[in-house]
Amino acid sequence: MPAPAGNKGQTSGHIVVGRISGIFGTRGWLKVSSFTRPPAGILEYKRWRVGVAQRCFEFQVEDCQFLGRSLRVRLNGVDDRDAARLLIGSDIAIDRSELPALPAGQHYWCDLIGLEVRDLGGRVLGTVEDIWETGANDVLVVEGGERMLIPYVPGRFIKKVDLAGRSIEVDWVPGYF
Image 1 (spheres, rainbow, N blue to C red):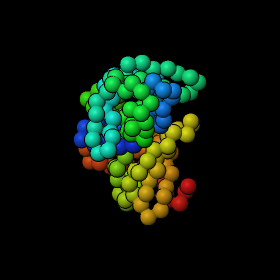
Image 2: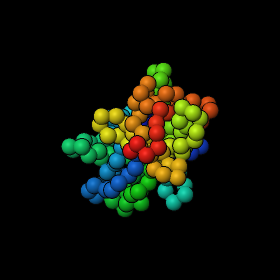
Image 3: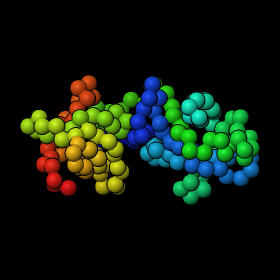
Image 4: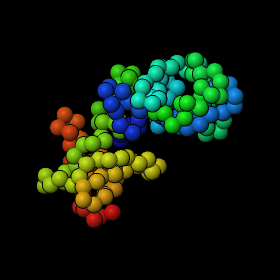
């Protein structure tokens, strides 16, 4: 099963693990949408790279609060509402080397995005554009002329993931979903 440590892609060795979605209060607190599972997993990474206006700044998490399902954080150097407002909409990235190793057969979502999907006969069905978490199982969103939703069920539909070859072999018939 893929592990969502940032299904929104990666650039230059960085993995996007969340997004700053808003501000809270007047003292620089930020509302954060986490792309990790569980959402609190984002707090395992103490150094965040936050992109603002085509530049990337590194921050350390100083404090955090959970209110229901919502995550609020304070970053070093972000001390007031005006500074916090500048970060709204920014992606939160970590260095890829900070990701823990996964057991055999598991993959991070960011590694699957962009892989070519082929059926058992070798016919190209498309490219993985996104991955949805549905509760029962994750679903690959494959674009290639038509959009296909392929359940990520290893052994049943997912036959082989070849990261080096940048492909996924599936037992799937276009038009099934």
